[in-house]
Amino acid sequence: MRIDKYLKVTRILKRRTVAQEACSAGKVMINGKEAKPSHEVKEGDVVEILYASGTLRFKVLAVKEVVKKDDAQSLYEVLP
Image 1 (cartoon, one colour):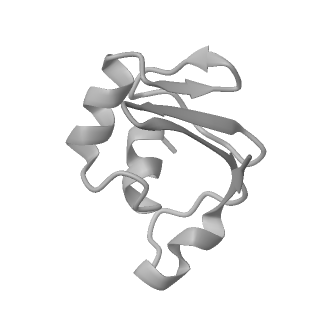
Image 2 (tube, helix red, strand yellow):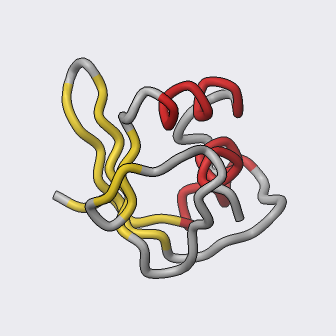
């Protein structure tokens, strides 16, 4: 699954266009490398998002096309 879609499905970012803009601006890293919006994400990948207020690092636990709002957090694990 594309990283921009994954960020939207997991509700880490609200909209896919916001996720695409973040990737294009170089604010999303997968396994330590800059990710374009079309970069494929898979289980076990470590994703880092750079916000103005800090950084969010998480590990991808599962990749699903559709998920309910309550189950979205089960797709990733936040890392310290």
